[in-house]
Length: 200
Image (cartoon, rainbow, N blue to C red):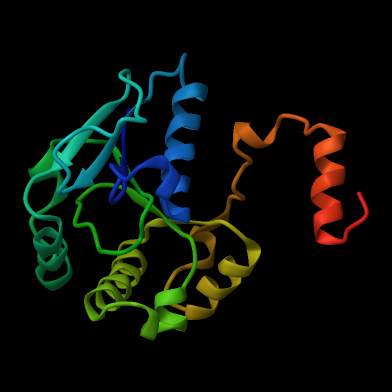
C-alpha cells in the first residue's frame, strides 16, 4: 500500500518550524522508524517546493506538486481541480497533515485537524486562508474523510460543527520528541526553578 503524507512548507528550517511543521516532521520520521518491516510505503508530498527537505531521510520518497503553491491552492479551493493523482501520480491513501486547502482526490483520504482557529478567529488569517479552510471542512464532510484531532477538546469542537460524522473522528494525541526524553541534571533543574521562583 502506498500512502501519501501531504503537507505544506516542508523546506523551512527545523528551528523555525511552526507547530504544524513540527508535527509533519516528527510524524514523518516516526512513521519511517516504525515502518521498517511493513509492506506499506510512504511518500511525503508538498506543493510549490522544488527540492527535498533536508530533514527527510533518503529512504523516503518525496513528491512535489508542480506549479506555484498559491495558484494550486486557489484552483483547488475555487474549482476542486486538478486532481492530486494527475499532478503527482497514484497512491492508495492520502493523509493531509496540513488542513489549509481542499485537496481534490478520487481515493480514500484522511486529515489531521489541529484546531478550528480559522473559524474561531478569522481575523487572524488572510481571506484566502479562511476560504480554503472552510472549503476543506466541506470536502472532508461531503466525502467522508477520516479525521484525526490532537485532543478531546478539538474533537468536541469538530463534532459540534455537525458536518462531519462523529464516527469518522479519532483523537490521536501527539507524542514527545526524543530530545525531551533525556533526564536533565538536578543542578540545571534547581537553577531553572530558582530563576522562576519555583520549588523543584
